Length: 349
Image 1: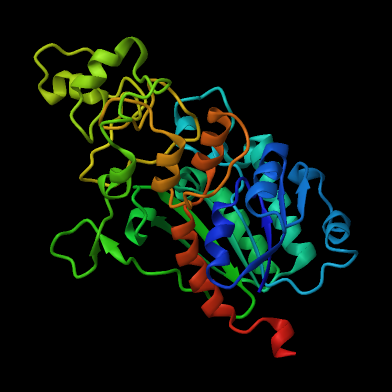
Image 2: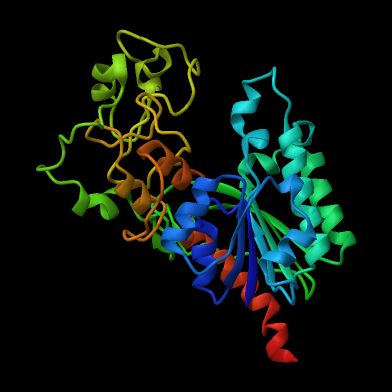
């Protein structure tokens, strides 16, 4: 089945879709670095570099040899900052579709849906897209898709519930011309009494990468001036450990006075906390050995193949992985879409 990838980044969503029978015939992102990552790891796919608001149907057709043809799926995750939790703190910045970038990316995605008319679409974003404060933005997406004939389903999925060793909640909006897509049921659970599989932990997937020999690698120092405090944070917790509300004898921080990820540490007995898009020395999650995670480790926590090659510096590679949809979660959603649309149009013809 032929798919077009928008806001492709390093291709996490597409890797999962490929496992379910989709072939990306065109990828697109405004960042040339992402195009280089695709050239290294998925070189057969044409890649269109440009801002979503500037792309046209003719641009897409030109990349596909002059004609778009039948497309089974458009998939992509528009940049999330306008819908992120951080905008609740940054009151001076516009949110959702009032943000010019938010409007450009969402409107561009919906325009592409109109021009191409694939049999189905997947739009992924942060959980914040489903918040009541962003109801108008989600309603706009659903209403415009429904006017094009799509039957739309939305839900928030936690990657940990699908075998990803990471607690990562994301909003999915999916639609099909052939009928409603039933988003996948959870396969894993944190409930020890559940009949589902247990959550996969960070310790399980990082064990062979975390040896005593390489535990002290240079370049992974974490915590900055607060490194001594980081070392005291219990695995799985954050700076709130040092608050009066948590009963600390010598409180250092106010309750909810910092970002949640400040001095946030992984526990080997739990899935990872959400991998952020920025590599930082005081904003985690950090390894339980009190250091910044390595690229090889965040690839594991995001379910990318070990062999997946990324372009750019350490920080640039981190941003690409941190912005990506975990391929394992993408595969679960892709399976539901593939089941809903069935046989590709070319085969049916």
